[in-house]
Figure 1 (tube, one colour):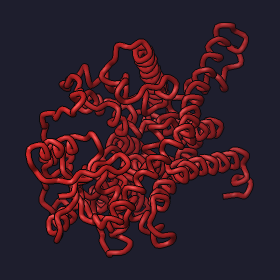
Figure 2: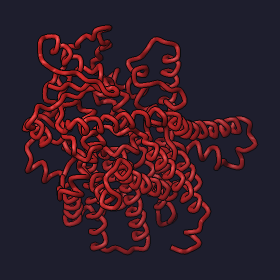
Figure 3: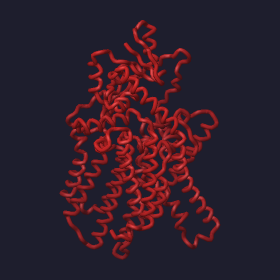
Figure 4: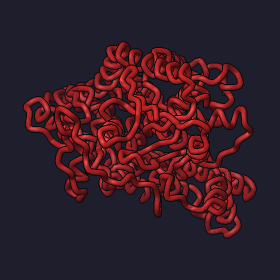
Length: 574
């Protein structure tokens, strides 16, 4: 690459934006945001085992459909600077930096550099829920963003390169075989990292057919593509073939862990309110997706904020109703933009398909560009469509918004029709008042999206004191247990792996569910160690939790436990 291209003003500006976006996330990590939870603690424990015990896990502990890629990266940072929450999260920060580079290159390639820079300015910030998914080292979101954008970018490079070779009438079976096998390998690794990439893998393959349809008629080249795919998936395939499914682990397909439903235990003052249990149905799933999950994943909730309990099920208070209507309008706008962008790209692609490429050499590249745009839009549309068929879209639409993380990749594709209207107008339309009004409206919509993402980032700084207080309480609880010699404990899911990682396994725990029965233990050896403890383990649960209430009831029934409280935890000593 020429020096002049490297010194392009847009490239320099992009580097500055990527640096500032990375520093923003690093600063949030230094502030302790988000607070460590057990999902992230599990990743930290995997990294500890990789770094210091020679472990080589093929899948995420207790969740056989996610890859432990973040744990292997974190293990490298542990060797450099020791285990901590900071070094654990450096792995996802690194993946996010690469995602920013890839989305900039992808947008520059199939749209233009100004839009690529504007995209960086938007995704470089982010509302709270988006940043939470990007910074939490628990697998999923960082890997989806990295691998999806990389796969789409590599697909564009391969198809555009094949198009140039076809114009020059150059063909090499060796080169095509290497390209297809590498694409298959990358697709396989992407699927291994997280199945959420599947809609984008599917559209990327359809786009690959546009450039390699003749080559894929060869059985040998098809075999190389499949071989690369299987090689990328080989860790998961090996795990599935050697480890039988476990009813005590989370599974994407087949039997897996499901916590039983227990009758609530009333506290001394007021019985817990369980609310109305929702039954999943397609209308409710669509409503949950459009009124809660989609606005959360795309920034709409930052402009009219609702918390998880007020967002769903729908509330009757005026502020919640107003924000719900706003979120619905936001989602409707998203769907309209998606339809407009998809319709334009599909129409252009179909029209260029009728053009004789020999008479118009540039038509072939233009058709590839439109195909690449459809690839991005198709992946985003497929992600949202499949999510609406998912029961959790109705049952838990707030936490399930993490399944829409891939929609961030579609931002430049959605904004392009507005961008073209606002900044690339036809000269003959500039003097028309109606066009000027539409142009101003397009600018305002783009500005609104940017404000939503940056406003959401600003809101996080106000949360820093509360998060630091929670982190201090977690650290104090760990130190208190260590001073008491309570190194083997029973606790709840959201405490167990978090405190095990914080203490670098000086405290070993086993999870009990709401009925004080064995719960989701992601690392089964911990349960065996707790059961084999020489002295009876302590029971450590958040005050007011179902486990705490049940243990209090057992005391009233004559069971002998000594109850202590520390910070916001109840500690039961047998």
